[in-house]
Image (cartoon, rainbow, N blue to C red):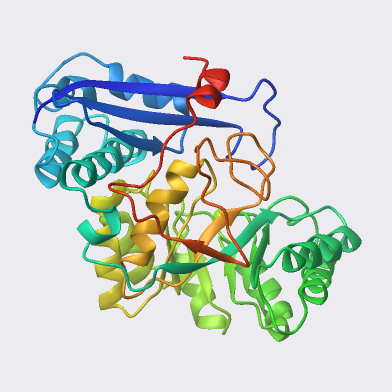
Length: 376
Ligand SMILES: [Mg+2]
């Protein structure tokens, strides 16, 4: 089997608002083969930048576009092709956009291998520890405590036992942060779990003070209180508070995750499989987290393609726990009523997602929706 073409699909809503919402555009990847099988992947990054990583012509042994590196290759050689793409982009890659683009190819290659062998991706990754994964509802933090209470309560009414609210109204003032978190806690009730995503808004001293003021809320975790490069700040925070600290969604490759785990001493390892290096690298990261007895939770705030890849990965981990499930009402996301661009949406039912059993990722794109939102 040989790769004959690598296509990118840049999707974008007609209106893109200036907010922390990853469901307003998307980049899908399709890897075609000479036997007619097509693998599907996704990159959650800047689609315009990522397209350039695919389209760039050959410049140098260590600087070539992904399409150039992939055409003619056997798509079943997944790890070898990961190394070929990593080495072939070394000058402009190693982290960031090039690894994001490699992630989309890698997901598509695992989908292809599943379709070629008739096996679901979770089985190719070593087998599922569970067929139904608890999904946590992930949403932006409303602007007022009243709205935070109502939103948290509504998500629990929709069947979720885990709710995360983040960004949005947080980071304005100490009084506001504490009031929003307390209102959300009241809204979800004693029996359910709440996470707060601070959205990179504090420095270390502020984060220590804020998390201390929230410790009686029994938060399941506080996410990204600090910028991803402030590893010293993360270490100070780890020493100062008992609440779990979660982070990792901006990181690419196991090298960055090793630093975050060992120097930053975080408690919950959040891997976006469409940015960190695909399922191949996410599996390596999960093994490194397992050595440190840390749980892994996928970051997934985009289409159903990313959700499916995240679900297969999380289900195949001994240190899997939850799957992020955005409840954003965007035509590109699944949310509470959408499709996530899939013909059969992967929808959370009573707070659980069922791992697909069909070959590969086990999903089919809704071609009409893809065509409607495709801009390049
Ligand atoms: Mg986050």
